[in-house]
Figure 1 (cartoon, one colour):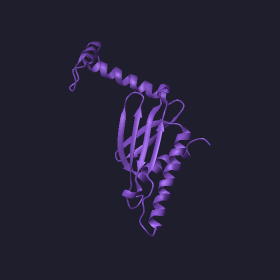
Figure 2 (cartoon, one colour):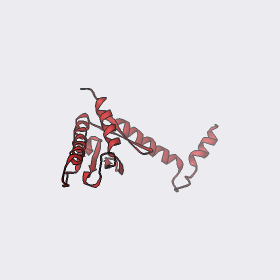
Figure 3 (cartoon, helix red, strand yellow):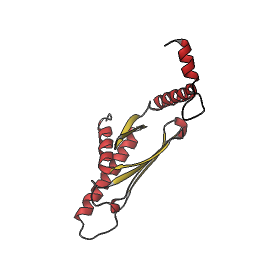
Figure 4 (cartoon, one colour):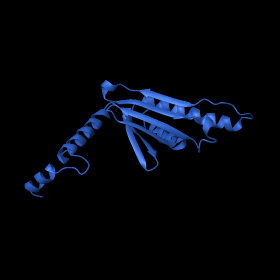
Length: 159
């Protein structure tokens, strides 16, 4: 492609905004560099929710805490199925608040109410995460899939 063609393409306007296309690429490049620098001390945990994969850096000790919390709610479902009388069971409410000045994950919450579902295979987990750059994501996925993703991540961590 010639230099003139590149300059014409770089000066073109995006179909969805009045900003030049060149500026959007620069912003995208800056965000990917920040994400790379941020992921240094922590490995990336990936949640596979439906057709979407969400990856973010998470410290090993926090991943282990999340794994224990998920194992606890799975045990709650086992206790619930063996209970003779209905009762109110405690919800899973895992919250991690990171250090925004360290450019890491600022907030992660995983919530699951075992009272709303009959089995862990029916249960849904609500996941909310927020980054220091201002990205906020809230989604819902199967509890068993979230647990499998966390367990796989923890198994790959060095002891």
